[in-house]
Length: 242
Length: 242
Image 1 (cartoon, chains in turn orange, red):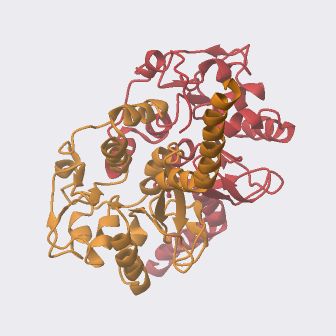
Image 2 (tube, chains in turn yellow, green):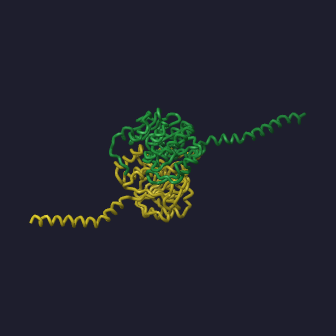
Image 3 (spheres, chains in turn cyan, orange):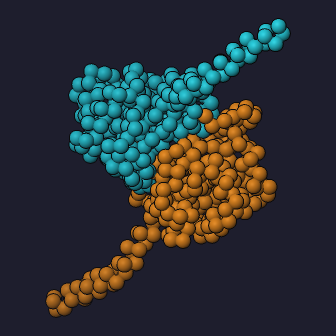
C-alpha cells in the first residue's frame, strides 16, 4: 500500500513536468514579449546628442528594451556634428516597433520634404505604443500630422522654424518636455535625456529611472516645466553653427 | 614732376601687393592651422554618451575643430548600448591629431589588454596638445602610462576596477573632472559634457562655451569639485546592466 500511495503523487509529478514542458515555448515567448523594440530614426545631419542621449538610457535597460536604428536606407548616416551612426534597417525591412524615437538636427528641416519618411512615421507611430521626439524631431512628427490638436514642444533656439510645419499643433513654449500619453516631445538636444528618464520612470518606476541616471552620473531635471531656454534662446542673436 | 612724385607711392603699392601675394599661401596655412583636429578613439562596447556628449559640443565648433573617429580598424564599431558609430580611420592611416578624446565603457576593460591601442595612445598623446578621457577611458590612459604621477579621475560606480590599471596615478575620488594642463580626465558618462565645455572655455573663452551650452539647452556644472556620485555610487549594490 505504501508503494501504491507513492504512485499517485509520482504520476502527478511526471504529468505536471510533461505539461510544463509542453507549455515552455509559450512561457519563453511571454518573456520575449516583455522586451520592447525601440526604433531610432536616422537621417543625414541628425543631431548626435538628440539621438545618443536617449540611446544611452534605453541601451542600459537591455532586459526591457531592444534598440534598433532605422533610416530610409540601411548603412552609414552622418550626423550634423560629423561622425556617422549605422542604420541597421531601412524603412522596408524595419521590424515592428513598440516605441519610436525621432531626433532633430539641421537635417530634420530637409527631411520634412521627404514623403517616404513622413509615411514611415505615420505607419510606425500608429502601430507603436509610444512615439517620442527630441528637439525639432517634433517638426517631422508635425509634418506627418501626428501632433495635430495635441500639446507638444520643440527646441527654443529655432522655435519659429521648428513649429512652422505644425499650424494645428498646440505648441508649448516653455517646457523641458510635454507628455501627452502615447506621444512625448522634448525641447532641444540635452532635454532628450530628461524626457527619456521621465518616460522610463512612467513605464518602469522611479527606482529604475534613478538608478539609470546615477549610473551615467547625470543630475536629472525632474520638472517638465523647467525651461530657462524658452527665454534665453528667444532672442535672435545671429546664431551660427561655428 | 607731378607724375614722378606719384610713381614712388605707386611702385610701393605694387611692390607691397606683390609681397603680400607671395606670403598669401602662408597666411592661408596659418588660418588652416587654427582648425584643430580632434580624434575620438572607438573600440567595441564603448559607452555611447561618453563619446557623443563631447562630440555634440566639439562638432558644433566647426570653425575651430574638425572631429575624426579612429579605431584599430576603420568601419562600424558597436557601442555597449547597441548602436554603432563609424570609425573613419584605422590606427595606420589616422591623420595627425591636435586633440585626443578617449571614451570609456565596458569595452574599455577588455581594450586594456590590447598592445596596439596602448601604443597608439602613447604615440598620439605625445604629439597632441591635449588628451582627454571620459569615464573609464582614464583606465586606458593609465594602462598606457600616460597618467603616472599625475592627478586624474574616472567614473565612481566602477572606481576600484577603473583605477586598478594606474597604481602610480594620483586618483581624485571626488571630481566632476580634473584639469592637469595637457591631460583632462572626467568622471562617468555625462560628466564628459561638462568637462568638454570647461575645455572649450579654457581654449576659446566663456562666451563660446556658454553659447554652445545654450544651443544644446544644457545647464552646465561649472564646478570641477561638484560630484555627488563619489558618495552615491560608492556602495556596492549588486549593480547590473539591465
